[in-house]
Structure formats: C-alpha cells, structure tokens
Image 1 (cartoon, rainbow over the protein chains, first blue to last red):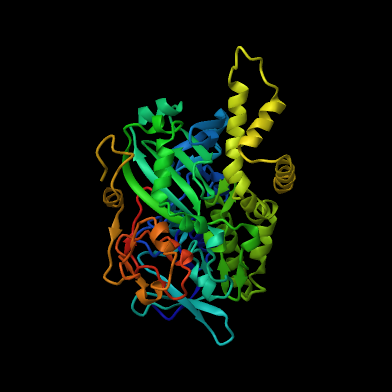
Image 2: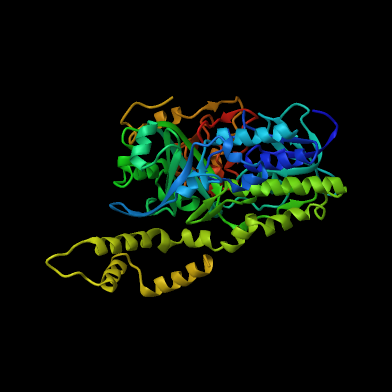
Length: 435
Length: 101
C-alpha cells in the first residue's frame, strides 16, 4: 500500500462499516474499507431480524433489491417452562408490503450487498486484511492503521472502527476498558434446512412472509433467551446466554439449543430438519450505561464496536443501530475532512447526530432494560408464574367451580417463590424502564 | 454440507462443527499459558467456548486447538486468570467463514 494519506479508513465491512464508507464515498472522499474475512459477512452472525427503515438513507425502495429471506409478518413472544408455553402472537399484513418492518437475511448476503453499495459509490473494499493496530502521532492523535499485509500501513485523516464486539482498536485508543464478561452475552445458533412449503405450512406463512419467535424461560439457570426465525428454506434456532453465568453453569451452549429444539412447543416445528450450519458470536448487551466515548482525535466508533446492540427484552435490535451509527459516522467524518478539522472537536457532530436520532435515544431511554430483562426474577421466576397462572385460567376444574383470578395468581406466586412486594417493585421498575 | 435426516436432536459435536467452513491458517491466533491455567479452579473456557476448543488435562493444564474457532472472544472474556489466554484475530482471510450467519 502507498504513502498517500487517505481521507478515511473504515475497519470492518459489516453493516456499520459499509454504511460509513458509503457516506464518505458519496461525499467524494477517498476511503478504504478493510475486512478481515474473505468476504463481507464471513465473520458475522445475528439473532434474526433486520429492521430496514434505516436503509431509506442508503437508497429509496431498497426493498426491491435487498437480499431478503423473508419479511417478518408474524412476531411471537413465548414464555416457557420445561412443560408449558404461553405465546403472545401478533401478525400484521402491513408488514408484508413496502416499506415492511422486519426482514430475515443471511448475513453474508446482506453484508455483501451493503458493502457493494459502498464500492459502487467509490469506496475501495480490501478483504482478507486485518487492522492490527492504530498508528498515532506524538500527540496521541490517530493517523492511520497497521494491517497484516506486507508494508500494510494505511495513513489517513480519520479511522472509523466498525470492527465489531471485540473492539480491539477502541481499547487501544483508550475509549473502552478491558472487556467485561458481565456486559456480554453469547449467541449460538443452528440453521436447519426444511423445504419451503413445509415451513409455510408449519408456521402459517405464505409467499415471502416470515415468523420471528423470541423465547423467555428456556435457558435453565443461565440468564438469556431463545429465538427462532424463518428463512426461505431454513429455520434458524438459537439462544443468547449471559457469559458469566454460562461459564459458571457447567452447561455447554449447544445443550441449551438442544433443550429449545426438544421443547414440546418447538419440536413439532423442526421435525425432520437437518443442520446446515452452527454458529456463535458475542453480543454487547450492556446498553447505554457502558457505552464508550465514540469519538477521539481522528477516530470514530460505530456499531457493535461501540456496544450499540439494543437488548431490551421485547426489542432486540442491532443491525439497524449499526447502519444508523455508521451512516452518521461517515457523514461526520466527511464534513470534518472538508472543514479541515478532524480533531476530537471536529468530529463531535457525530456524537451530536446519534444523540438526536434513534441510535442513542432508544438506548438512553431503555438504559435500564438489559438489567431488568436479565434479572433473577424475570429470568427464573416470572416465566413459571405466568405459565402457571395461564394454566389455572384455562384449566376447567369441574366439578369444582372456577377459582377467582386472585386465587390463581396467589397460587402461581406461591409456587414460583414470588412475593407481592416483588411484583410491585418490578412493576414500578418496568414502568420506569419502558415508560 | 448437511446432516442426515431425523438426527437433528443428537448430532455429534464433530458433525456439528463439520457444518462450519474454516480456512485454517498456519499461525495459532490463540495461545494458552498452561502454567497459568494450573492455578485456575474454574476452567470457564472449557464450558463456555461454543466450539469446545478447550480441554482440561490431567495435570491441571489446558489443551486447546485454534483451528475450528468462531473467533467470538468468549474464552478470553470468561477467563479469570490474567495472562492465561492471548487472543488475536486470525490472519486476514483465515478462520471462520459463515455462509448463513
């Protein structure tokens, strides 16, 4: 590589990085987009749904060409015990027509498509290349990246790190402390092949309609949850597991997937399915309160590298936050270069922009959600409480008359070790978190 | 590559990992200092690694291989013993290559 000083180097051709490179290229800036995998998406895995409206800033009518598997028109939340399951199942036909709501994809397809947009706009994509460190000047300003290619130093005005959850460059820049297992979960997933018409029949879908199920109460004593979503001719099933408790549990992650697949509410959906691919990835779940500073002299952070996955129970989103932050980082870097000031101060509009949009506003508003969702009672007591209460409501006890709801609730509380003060406290906490 | 029918609930770990594409490089991107591991009582990496790459040895150390690594970072994050696990990305182009992630 050469001695020329690029306007920007973007590290990582995932959704954040490609979005950032796209905006830089559109602004006429010279930008190299580094990807350590052999192709964009090779290192990436997610838990099932991309919410695409953020792509309105990438191109109009993006849905006509995005490599989608299915459009999610059916969304279920399932609360489980080993022998019970209560689902809230919602369907909207509006979600099956433009501009849609959620889509399922294969990340190699989607990430490659988005990287292609950046390349078409003029970014230079360099794959199979690791950014091994930052180049800094005497004042500590970031002035480039080192790569694992021979003579692979790249000098530039702004480095945008979109390197994902391990975020080594941000740690090197001093923006992130040492990795803390408490703020990370492990996602494990199986992609299972089933014929398309079998998926349609089992899940009540037609055409390119899709289903996404989020599950609570299926991860034994490990805080977390399960998920299942449909692709065109595969079904993806997996679990998200809190790292410290997983490590202490003595249970291996694939055993939790096996539990979910064996559950009476899930097993019939998957009969005869064959394993196509097993995958695992870390998720930064700490939320707003543990997010790093996102800008430094000559340096910006976006996507998972900045901890931007939203894990708020009923909302589980990450790719949209990556794209939203990446677009904003690319625009801020382009303007800073144009204005001749890419110091920390010159790059500050990035922080201001994401603070004004969903990217940080959703995170700030839901800052208490990760802690509540992973709390002991929500994880280990309330699934049983809810399931026992539902069973009591729907069980006909003839010749005994129907018990009242209050009696049923008290019984479910007793069985699951829940006190009234717990419900009141968590009710207030939940009200504050989700207000 | 896909497994034969109706075995979905009991594929062996070897079969499970055979569904994943890896481009194995010559350089081990993980190194483990087994001397440090000998003083570790939890061996959290053994349980948590989704690729099951870490195995305890009879003398209290850790045997591992780097070749079928998802590059997730779980091992070094759960490791309680400073300096036991050194972790970098594999060299460019090497390592896991998900097709359906």
